[in-house]
Structure formats: structure tokens, C-alpha cells
Length: 268
Image (cartoon, rainbow, N blue to C red; front, side, top):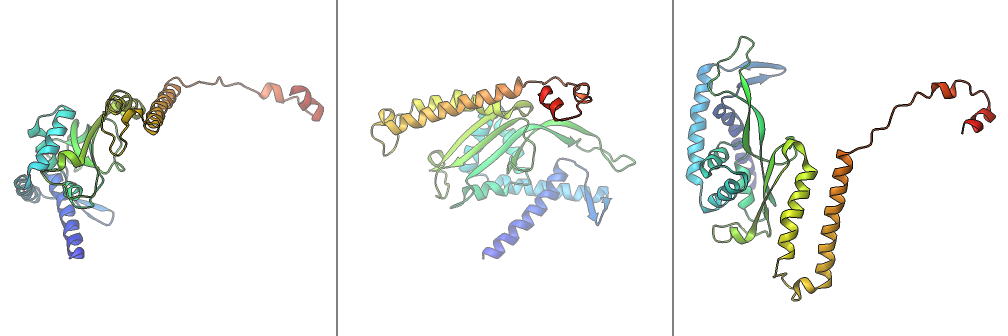
């Protein structure tokens, strides 16, 4: 059963990649060796048709768990819930959501919302086989290791290995987002920690098994460590932004006349 499930997942991923390209109107090619063959307009139309069917199948599978994610994303990024839903069901990594919901599933689910180069819808092929393209903001699912991060990152984190259900998702899943416009990750992370996480931690009343709460020395040490980390993060960011530029010095005139050890000692 496990092998069958993996094989099926792989088939879906491959098909999803092909169909996802059709949905976005991107150039479709069949690669053989080092040659790329542009697919015919009929093939593109057929793939677009299949992509539409796949989108509707995914839309039919959306339940209260998906709606919870969609609502958080829409609120955190500033899109409508309909826009978020369309982005999710068109994404070739849609299966990652199901893996996140599963028992002992993925610990995190990441979304990037940033500028990406996309092909124009219904764009005609040029003589060289290329299509017109433009930069647009796009919301997409990511593993976080293959795409450059230049915009907003929204994330969901699991707190246990339980199956995520409609009744427990608000307790078992945490949501957060931070803005790293223009790739300024340190500034985005610093703001997220200092303006959101630390105030939330310091106002938290329930610390689980620790009955003393904020009065507990370990809790105080933890909060101090977080504050100290944010301070270090801020200093690192400022050092990078205000980095010292050393003036280039021509040292040839100083060393050209050095002939023996005493000359070197004198120069030193």
C-alpha cells in the first residue's frame, strides 16, 4: 500500500507540474535529451482542459481545514479568500497540504507571496518559440529551499503529530507571516520577533506545566535570551547595512625598495 501511495503521489506531482504550466499559460515543451520541442497548440489546449478539471477536483476536496488555512493566508497577506483559493488549487505542490494534515505529517507548510516572472495568458509563440512574459505577484506553496525569497513568507507550524481535523486545527496549527521585501530577511525576521512574538510571549498567562508563569526563573531566562537574540540580530543587520568600506591603498611604493631584513624591520 505504501509503495502504491508513493507511486500515485509521484504521478500526481508530474501531472500537476504539466497542468500547472497550462493553467498559467506558460510555454510547454517536451524535452528529449538536450532538445526542447514546443508542443502544438492542440496539445496545449488539451492540457489546459485537463488542468481545469484538476482544479475543479481539488476545489471539491476543500473542507473546513483548507478554509481555515485560506482565511489565515488572506488575512495575513492582504488578498481575498477567493484569490488564495485559486492560487492553492492551481499550485503543483497542492499535495503538500494533504501531507501537512496527515498523522505525523509535515511539520511546516510554507507560502511565498512575491514577484515572479510569468507568461501572459493566451500568449502566442514567437518565431523563436518563446512567449511574452511579465513580472507579477504570485502566491505559491514552497519547500523554502528552491526559490529565492524576496517578498512575504506565510507559514503554518504543527504543534503535535496528531491528524489535523476541522475541530482541532485552530489548536494544533500556528500561523505566522513576515515581510522580507527586496530580500531583506534579517529586517523582516527582526520585526516579526520584536513586534509580534516577544510581546505575545510576555503577555502569555498559560505556560503549561510551569504554574508560576512569568515569575518562573526559567521563563525569565528564556525571554531574556530571546530579547538578547533580537538585539544581536539588529546589530548584525545594521553592521551589514552600514558596512565599513576600506580604502584601497597602493603599497607598491612602500615595498619596492625593501632589500634586506633590516629594511623590513624598519618598515614594520
